[in-house]
Image (cartoon, rainbow, N blue to C red; front, side):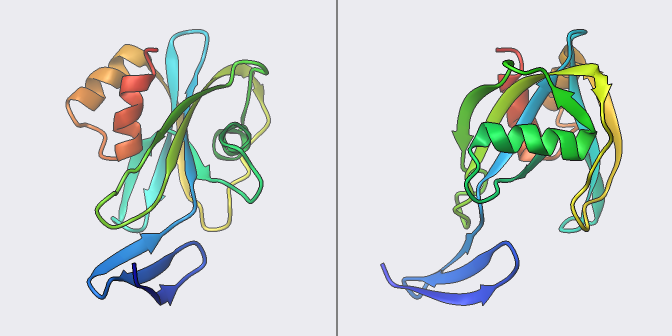
Length: 164
């Protein structure tokens, strides 16, 4: 396999592979399936510059150097929603490749519980725009995913995992 760097940014690189394929290299990320004791899943309304739209999606974030998926999930949940997780509720569910046609990104899934009484406030990364955090009944969420009312792949996949 012949690989040459075409472009490098803050979080990703683009390579030309075998003089034909343009491949995006991106750090691994974690999608967080956070639920409460009332049967709700946590969603965030986030602005996505790549599509120029606000989307409702599960919380997620890039893994920092040296973190495992559970550590990333706990950190990102607190940063994006302002809520703390219930210690001991973390469960690693597995991973997927969301865009296998042109990127090597690995997206891990972690399920955990939130105690809504432990709100500590959001701490968003620079440039991150989250306007709202919502608790939605899990069955409503699954039905909205089935009808493709959400347009984010990790959120759609999470509807298969939230009920387990």
